[in-house]
Length: 384
Image (tube, rainbow, N blue to C red):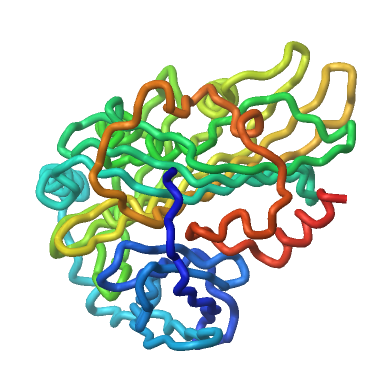
């Protein structure tokens, strides 16, 4: 019902660092003048589809100059040049970091979507046991976003359009825990919209103005923050990237404070079986926002969680890594709210709702994050 019909125009390519030729991951790839977007994978490769001919693409990443590339038939090769700004420019950046953040918060009404939006997103979730993949889930979801000037996320909703999963059939790979994840991360961890994630607690942090950096050729205030007091719940370490001209939050980096493991567990873990010991090691997030035609919206979100699990009778714990990626690939109009019966809840498990990997053309009508070679190899092994 919600498939993107007629995405017959396809461009594939690879993005490399112009200085050393290495692949550049997490590059935002956008069709200018259209609504389609994606990001590069760990190998720097991408595929983007459109209902209209694609004549050029825009490539954006923190620390690199923006690239506008003419494209045609065949595979596109893109080289991005790292940005090195003069030291004297960094030395003149002054100001109270707290006042800068508060000024950016006051500009949210002007800088971000002021009307409801319905976003189509591609979501991928991978779980590794030590160095081996044991689960891969993928989904296309619709995300309903109320206006950003509404300072909470309770009106926002997510719903699945299409999904699939493949899991290891080894008996010892079964992990019966529910972690924070699924397409609801686009609601829960949109820090500009969900103010109680970070900004409502701003008085509990120490802020520091760091050296500026560039995103999409635009100079950013960079403000680091660390917990200043001890609360009954875990706080975060991280950085805020704020456009110096528009005071738009361009990027937010969060890393959960692990000084109290019980507090960190309450943030990361939804449920687990009785008798299973869960030890958190790391949880981090990157949230990118993209500005276009005077409006800024969430563009890309990546979370990574590392933890150990073991049963009480076992002496050696097993390490796991859960990675979630979500990229906004399309904007759907009109922006109708998602019906309550279709809402994907925080407590829902994507594994329970998705069919197995079978059809090689499963994502033919959708924009996705191109799987890396290592992920394709892992899926091939899991299918056996």
